[in-house]
Length: 145
Image (cartoon, rainbow, N blue to C red; front, side, top):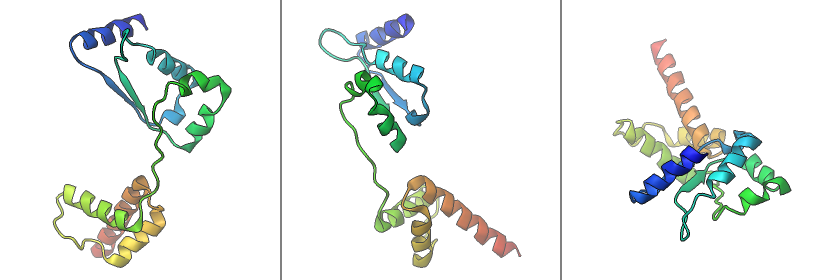
């Protein structure tokens, strides 16, 4: 912890405010969450010297509700709950992902296929990615027959 404190202070003195991103926070142990709470204490007399963004699933919020995590919960300034994408957002998301991969055809998936992808994925981006990959693989295998 002392080395981390020195490193953070050094960054601060150089005009750098580190941002720590932690994905899958719901899998962290109690010890790791305690360390995270300790890290949140690093500050100067006037301001915090780092920002920490946590990304977690719903069970993490229930876990934080426990009195044993009150000190960590009290250090959180903002909590945002991401809702599943709407059908239209799903269509745009798929189009964007395809364009990013180099596809310039706006009709790679038919409207019916996009509806099916939305229904099977529940509008959750990770599921949309998985369902799109499966649909493309199935299409490829059918063409090979």
